[in-house]
Image 1 (cartoon, rainbow, N blue to C red):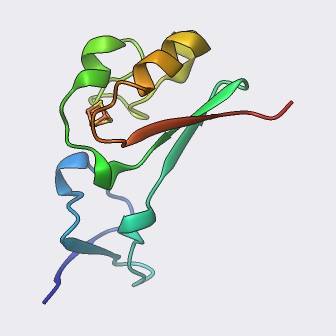
Image 2 (image 1 turned 45 degrees about the vertical axis):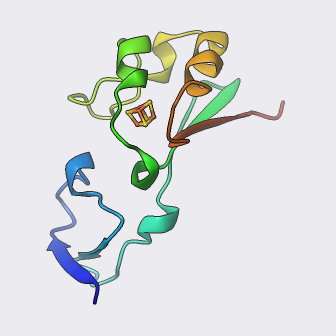
Length: 107
Ligand code: SF4
């Protein structure tokens, strides 16, 4: 049986509470978050970095590789403007879980 955890809509979805076996419901709207397909996108106009929190294993490779971009204490935690597109591509390709991916923006 699934575990249900309720949060107020004002609370951020901190990474430590995003667990695949727990379903989250918004207390205001009473809608369940679609955890399996939860994605955040960050674009610099050239590429868009996509983060899928439920895939993240918190290995910290991103934080160690590009600390000016990935800061878990900041909001948003990804500051894509702090690295070149090439550096971002190289780093995203090293994410061990596939939580990070990117696509090239169309001109
Ligand atoms: S490198 Fe990937 S798996 Fe590791 S913390 Fe960053 S996003 Fe998560």
